[in-house]
Image (cartoon, rainbow, N blue to C red; front, side):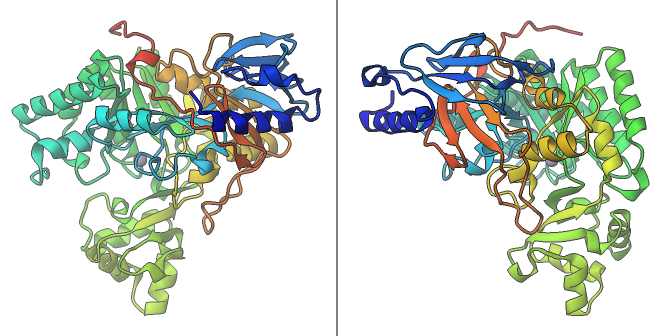
Length: 514
Ligand SMILES: [Zn+2]
């Protein structure tokens, strides 16, 4: 429970909020749990239904009523005229696992309307899961957390430094035991990063065996697939096959077509996934709203021959040239950061290929690479089974870390009309909640946890850019997590009401075999 000082702060917030309306008697303001009635807003309830006028009452951390509700005595009343009231956004692919300890207010996240982050994607997770979640319970953040078991994390635990090969059956069995441990400790699924160093050596069969374990505990298999470039279609087929063989729901992370050779092929990718869905494989995907990805520099070279000039040369050509590769993190030469490979090579009077090889030898780099096209991004977002996920998080060196959700609402909904507002909200709320089987989040309904966002649909927009990736978004007015205010009119409101989403907050597993 909030200490007395905390309550005093909340009362001040209440007075500020209620200033426009009649303040309620002070005696009621000291009630142990705050109650709010949000009046006059347009409700986007997370289901995709059209906007409708509805008041929302929050009490005891839950949605107490929705519709023609009048404020109870003692409620703080929020005038939401002109605003959209929506469920808190659930970021199904978020890289803030280690950052939350230092930045529990998670300003760059809640300012977008994010109320839940799913951590441990791309095959890399905190470990042990139980300890990590216990720490989040001891030191709650402003956002709720859920976590995946990382495939590379357990692979490394079993194989140590001898991971550059297929795993033996007994090693797969030991990894399976670790996945089981993680799921029992509260993970919501298994993630893999098959384009990366440790995970990339796994054969499909290894992933099938481990995904089966996640499925047994009601989890999903979420994958940064083996290739997002010229061989993306093979990689889509592998992800589908894993779903089929392990009978596990599959989430393709940050779906994209990232090289010149596969541009304009979204329709074919969609047809492939639609066909799998039609035969009963439960495949969905998420996407971030940018035509540039962010990762380690080595993922550019799919054959992993990082110091072989012809491979590097092809890799750079495949993304449209070295001017499309922005170096964002390079410990050996911080002066390269936020400059393109092309520009640095020019300055140093060497070829971009030689510079690439040197950077990898000097410890590698983080890069942002502009190699996708809007036409494909739009086609993916227009699929019902594609949701919004940031692939960002606190301190990301890509604008998606601070801008993903407002960018979709401001640019893709309001300016470009790619999506309707209710559908975009569903992709940020109801859809990921359903994917993760979250029992009481993702929609605004009586009895649900009061994770609620109020934003102005006329102004909501991202402000982060490739050169200033941490600029905060604007237009998100208020954010509640578990019925406590964590964001208010452009500032953190002090709430640390984020919960741990473990097995107890998920729909019990029915072990459905499709
Ligand atoms: Zn990834």
